[in-house]
Image 1 (cartoon, rainbow over the protein chains, first blue to last red):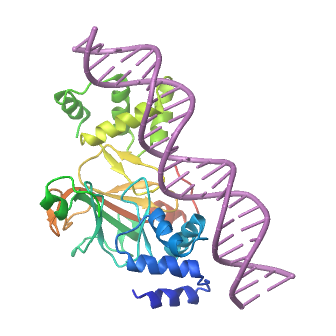
Image 2 (cartoon, each protein chain N blue to C red):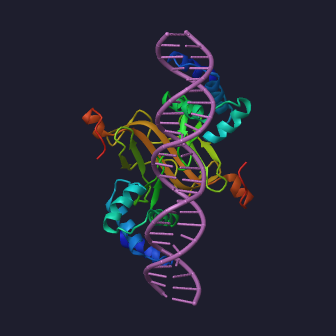
Image 3 (cartoon, chains in turn red, blue, cyan, orange):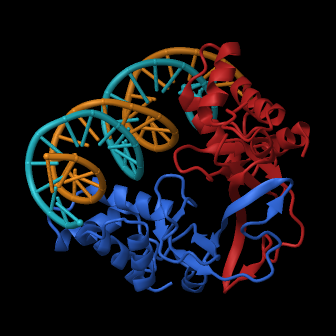
Length: 144
Length: 144
DNA sequence: GTGGGTGCAAACTGTTTGCACATCT
DNA sequence: AGATGTGCAAACAGTTTGCACCCAC
């Protein structure tokens, strides 16, 4: 979904588009590496020195609640965020820590369906293993 | 997998089966509700007053590392643990907080396979929504 | 002027760590 | 005795909260 479309959605809901919010949304769009809150904060505070961590937390929570972005909880110690909300899997490499988007066809469970009488609202299909890059390099190649 | 089989595995790997470890493993077997560390600790410290949180953490990490139990990271704020290691999905009710086991057939991705050149080692298929119990009760029925 | 948004710092929570003591072989 | 496991308390990291200030309508 394009940036403009998400911004339109915000306006439709009467949510103010502040500089900080725009910055976070744009950053997520440009960074497909599923950044952590700290990474978002560090990058943006270079441009907006007065930016506060609390604002980043507030903004991400707001976007998540309104379905503009997705939270990734594949690692228990910190949250990551994904601009893409179309259904897809996430692959975490336990060696280098990178998280890859993976498109998988033919999943038996889909959003808005039912399973065992429970209503499905959100899917978080996580996969953990060793990524192709680490497999090729053999050694313990570090993160990007 | 039966308790005895897991204990045998531990012994095969030369890992000592202490009272504390046995207690944690047995508790997980008997409690299918995917307890948190705190829940495990609270329950067991009633029986073993000297038990330490650190031991519970150590033990769970040990069991997880040796593939006897499974960590659930569907909630970002705390870890939960599951005695069942056979592949299955987890459903989190965002209203009452309960986590259900869900058996799903026909998933395109399986353990030990490959996806986009990455080697799959572990699957964590999480589903979030409203559970059948909460749907029936309509209101905001609390957790068990 | 009012309501919502931001920034700062303190508080909180789950988890990890360091170290002394205990336990098993 | 030596190695491994346990318990306690302090440290840590990510997140949340309370409150004063600021800005857009």
